[in-house]
Amino acid sequence: MPTIYNGNNIKEALLPHNDVMKLPLNTDVQVYFNEWEECLKRIQELCGKKWLRRSLYRGDTRNATVLFRKVFCCHRSGVQGAPIPTIRPNQKASKKVGCQGVLQVTQYRDREDLAIVRLTMDHTNHVVGSRSELRTLPPRSDVAQSAGYGDVYNELMSLARDFQSPDQVVQMSRAVSFCLDSTHGISRNSHEVLYTLVIKHPGTGAGFPTAYMITNDQSVGPLNQWLAHLRTTSSFGPLSITIDCRIPEVNAIKRQFPSAIIHYCAFHVIQAWKRQLKAKVRLDASFTSSELGRFREYILSQLKALLFEPDLDSLHQQLADFVNEHNGSHCDEFIDYFVDLVAINSGRMGPMERENAIRRAKTRAVTFRMGEMITNPENDHRNDVDPVGVWKVESFVTAGHQYDVRVDQNRSISPSKSLRNPNF
Image (cartoon, rainbow, N blue to C red; front, side, top):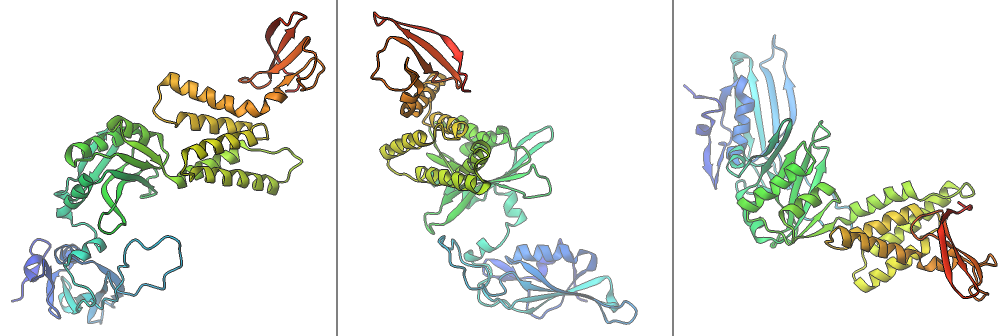
């Protein structure tokens, strides 16, 4: 009498093949119908392959011989279409190799309690069980459990789970430059995010993920604990990390690796600048919306040039030119934001150094307006006049305020308190 298999003993129906198992070709394997999905899942894990549904048939229970049939094709079936021309090269080969493998699950009317699993066509154009197949398959459940999968953070309703394979641990321990990527929209819960630490693989030159963490808490807490966990268990010691411009990521990295250099992702920097330009750069009613859009695009093009300038001295000069060009031209709010941003991110500074850096940057920003900010006693901006009288000087730090500076016959200067500029 043929053996009827279930999820616990389905392995006995398989044959050894390379480093995995294999269903015998054109052989009926009987499983209990209410367990066929669990059996198929176990077969996929043991055989190192994945089956995709191709068709489904349900017969009439009154007179059909076949009540149920589901046909699956190999996950490497099909052929990749013509590549779309792109500047960015393909990082890995397609999974589609035209495999002809077909598997059927059938329920017959005379034995409704059983399902027949049958491999009707064998795999072609790829070697099942080879190492090259690993990149095309999800991790097996037993591999995931033995690869350091576990809680790294669990407090109240917050949850974080990390997972890392042994091969990823090895690659992480050898690397010094990483990219920390966050992927949103991974579930119906908008708070959940997938963090991935990626390196450039030394063999392929393509991106290679070395660790993952899923969490519903995007604060610094789980990130900080995850990085500490990787440092202890996976020899994680980055010299530089590229991130998505998020403060929790910055704080967690600085806490665990204070000497690591943090780079911001260029794409996310540009997106942040676009949002700030839209919020802070405005023109008066004499300009149309299209003119405003072109003006913002012009500023953005200058910012992109700054972002990709490799020479430090040239960058400093371009920064000064940019601030000088736009300060006071409907961009005051954005220039203040930009100057503060540059000053704060100019290195590791304490509170006093940071404040001084901001002041120096703002001072450079108003240098080109110096002549316009001082009004002589003849009520213009020339400096070749008799100095005796009252000079009006705009405040360098408080918009809309000015100082009256009196010069007498003895060239003595006596400044008064600041006054509200009537032109503001």
